Length: 353
Image (cartoon, rainbow, N blue to C red; front, side, top):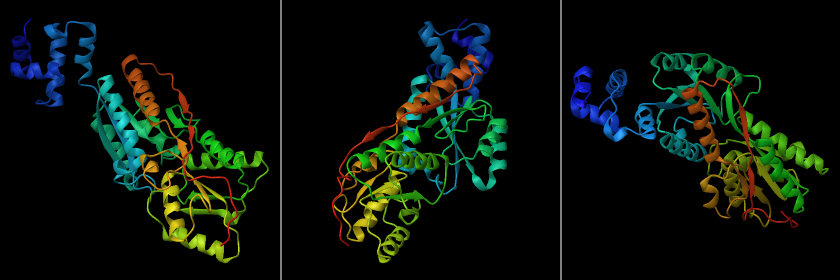
């Protein structure tokens, strides 16, 4: 059997057969699939692909995974791929897909048309498996997606009672690390800046941070818990108003603030600066996620590092195994964090407003 025979049986040109086996662009996915199917049926293997590893590569070149995102939720925006955390995560997912011989396509669901959009994706059947960005999704939404798209793994959240594969951050551990650090360097007057949009990750971070403080006999009064938008890297008028109102009531500025994500922490530092409050001389700030921008802001942000590369690799590898070997035992994996000390935190000093 020769290449010309495969081309004749598949009703394509010889060059199209060559492109199908090389993995190069120039033919459509349907044509590539038809060529590879014909070649498999007649037992044709090109000379350059006679080894086992090469044969696997020839098969995998047509396989694809979908990165599925639900947008317009207050956390995951329509331009999610430009948001620092998701941008980094997607980069690592793409890289791992390439290493495993998969192409990666992207699809979005508008939260306002959730049922319609998920049904369309189900009917299109455009990929072998789906990596769902679960950051902003509810248990019910993930359950619904799983019903329609069973070959999936959910990234960046977890619901223990669903028979679905999850890869999540150890949010409790990371926030606990932040709280323990602030207490260990002498802070007892601590504030908390939360997201005004609640998701699983933020709830778990609050639990971990409060646990660290409770173990050390430290309490955060209600007036020291503020809430702002979680996706803004500039100063926020809403935070400025809350801080001003707090100080106008005669309360003493906390010597440190924990912020539920780096976006909030960077925004807080800029807002504090506009109020004439210095970081870390007057108050310390600590974030969570270790996005690239945490190194650009001045002072550099003390934060909790999230192993985005490891999470991406686990997601792609587990989903690949799921697809290729039919292993249906699901797993829920929690990836630990580690603390990154930079210049936005210091031991407390007296502050006079």
